[in-house]
Length: 106
Length: 106
DNA sequence: ATTTTGAGAAACCAAATGGTTGCATATATA
DNA sequence: TATATATGCAACCATTTGGTTTCTCAAAAT
Image (tube, rainbow over all chains, first blue to last red; front, side, top):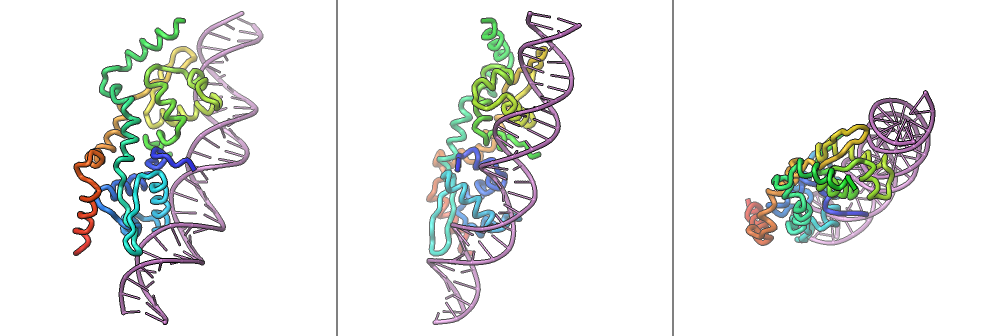
């Protein structure tokens, strides 16, 4: 079960769930109300999100409140870091072509 | 065929390909050398990356050079923006709990 | 002119994914 | 105590995914 953050955010429903629990703790039932699919389907998404630690559970009686573990989101941001300078254009398309040409004439 | 950026970066091989073509234009053959899987498998990944515009093609004779379209990576960064303040702790777990309690006593 | 090489497309396949329904269990509520 | 509610889990199913092999085609190289 390769449950990494990138696989977790691939699904649009899970991204929506992330956005929901980002600003308030919610129960599976409360979350399911926002979607067409069944509560069990949402539950499975929550399981995946929990397994990769993107969300955390907090039991309160028979209810379970889910919240976003924002720190885990940083992992995605960290991965993006290596490309950030590229889209900020300090190292652009032309540079890349020149670099390619240079490494090719060996 | 829902070819969005998030689905594209879900696969670890594709993330590796992205990292490779980020710094120099490469042909499918050159890319495939970095992996265990066949050139055709890499080709399929490149197709997916192309379809969601994460990479761009540049034909040169019979060779096709692939480069990263860094601008498209910004989409991921943009999605992360809404959570950035959360992991920077300006709005933390406790706040969330309080907010939840408040909205519940209606 | 013939052969080799680079690349995409098609057909196929096992495994993973996202959904469903039905069930078990623990906690509230009547 | 009996019933209703919240949740997770298992079994099942259709579709998607990621890989393979085979094929075709165009461009280089011989």
